[in-house]
Each structure stands twice: as C-alpha cells, then as structure tokens.
Length: 291
Image 1 (cartoon, rainbow, N blue to C red):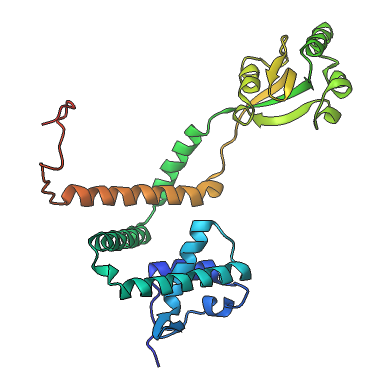
Image 2: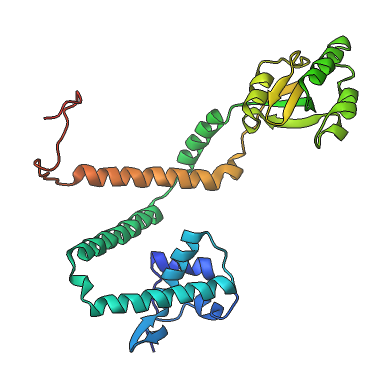
C-alpha cells in the first residue's frame, strides 16, 4: 500500500479547482489518489495523474475556463499533444540545446519562486490589529460623494434648450413630467430618475456637469454626450458608506498578506550577496548619473 502523501501547494490548488467536476475524467480529477496513480502510458512512458492535474489547473487559469466535460476533453487532448511533442524533442536531443537549457532553468526558477512565495503566504499571520489598520486606510480611501439625480435625454440640441427653458420657468417643479413626456431611454418612465450613483460610473461630460451642481440645481445649458443632449437635475448628495469590516475582511486579509510577503521578499534581496559584472550591468549614482 502506498504511503499517504501530503498535498503540495500546487496540487492543493488544483484539487480545489477540480472537485465536483463532471465528465469523462471527473472522478480521476477529484480523487486524491497516491503517487503511483498514472493517467496514461504513452509510447511506453508513464505519466502521473498528479502531473496532469497541474497541467489542467494551469490551463483553467490561463484560459479563464469553467470546469466542464468539454474543457476536460480539450485539456486532455492538449496534454497528449504536449507529451508526444516533448518526446519527439527528447529524441532530437533538444534538451542539450543551449537556448533550451536556459529556458528550462528559467522555468525551474519560476516554479520554485512561486512555490516559495505561496509557502511564505501560508506561514504569514494577519493580526486583528493589522486588519483594523488596513480597514481604517480603506475607509479613508473610500471617501467619495454619491449623487441622486434626474435627467432628460433628447437627440436634438435645440429641443434640449427648449426643455431647459421650461425647467427654469417652473424652477424644476415639472422636471419629472417633462422627462416622462420628452426623454429617451429607460429612465423616461421613471421621470428621468437615475437613483444614487457614483459620478465615476458616468461618462465624463455628465459626471463633470453633476459635480458643478448643488442639490436643487439643474444644468441651464444642455450637456452633450455620445448618447445625446442632457438636462440634468441634481436632487441630493451623500457621503458613500464604506463596506463593513466583515464585508471587507477577505480582501483586506489578502492585501495585508501580500504586503507582508513583499516585505519578506525585500528582506531576502537585502540580505543577498550580489556580485555584479559591471562590464554588463551599469549602476547609477544616487544623482542619476552613471558610474
């Protein structure tokens, strides 16, 4: 009986991505198995299920695909192509080519680097104090104004100007009625009501116009956007509420953990002994001039 294996970082990620899969190889993908489980023997050479699992997870990530029987079949065919082409390369002894050696070494370094950073992240603890500090920063960065407005949209500038005159005459008291009678688009039935919005979600001319108004004011000159001509009435403003700590916690934990991993990486660099070939790498003085 094979010894029970502790899943590596990569295989753990892969299993999480493939559990519950459906299709012709779903059971194999979802099972942990042991180190001796193969997915296929190709031209006399055995290839492990774990190797295919890693390939499958990478293809899902690279293509942003959803797990499905169709994707499983496509990935398996791609894996077969990879195997037979690499076997052919071995026969040509391409692994001895200098450029291939460099590419393989770079790939090895990339995999090891990723595994190390993931291992550091798993070992990194995020304290309640760090979360609270990150949340305070988030609240400060989240400060923004939200607007509640109505608009009347038409496709003709002269018509927009006539509507603006009517709005001015009634001091916007009949704005809703004018919108229902004249406005284009889905807000017409609601009297041009746009509800609450962040100006950043609006096209630039509209957002800039709203930003110049005080509640109760309207644009006396129509505003042109790619949608047509707008007469805008600003009804209210409010400070946007930041997400609660509980809502923001998963994202904050990830952000703090990434910052701490970056700190560890910076320490590794600072403590590394680096002897540069100054015939190849030209350093710069602090004033920006080359040595």
